[in-house]
Amino acid sequence: MSTQDMHFEVDNLRCGGCEKTVLKGLSSLDGVTDIAADHELKLVSLRAEPALRQAILDKLQSMGFPEKSGA
Image 1 (spheres, rainbow, N blue to C red):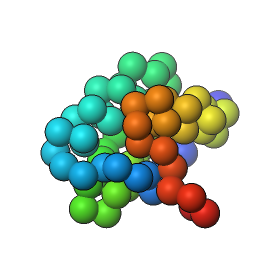
Image 2: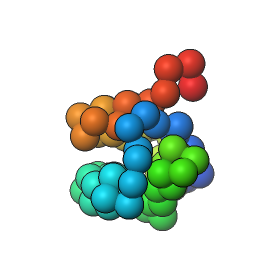
Image 3: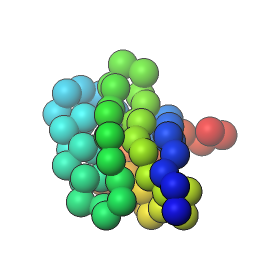
Image 4: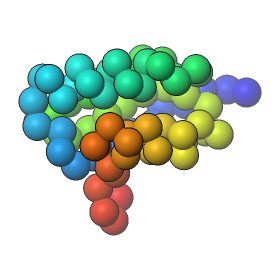
């Protein structure tokens, strides 16, 4: 399968510490690479197979960074 760029607008991403938490948490998922988090834009970007989308959202939610409503 091929990977693709994914972008998630998330809530509660407020500082550099939050960014580090997101990077560490998502890097534990197999198949997720090129992770970047930007607290000013409240945006998480990464590369992964499309099939991993829900697992990524679940991981973000479990860490306290749910996808923004209506995103």
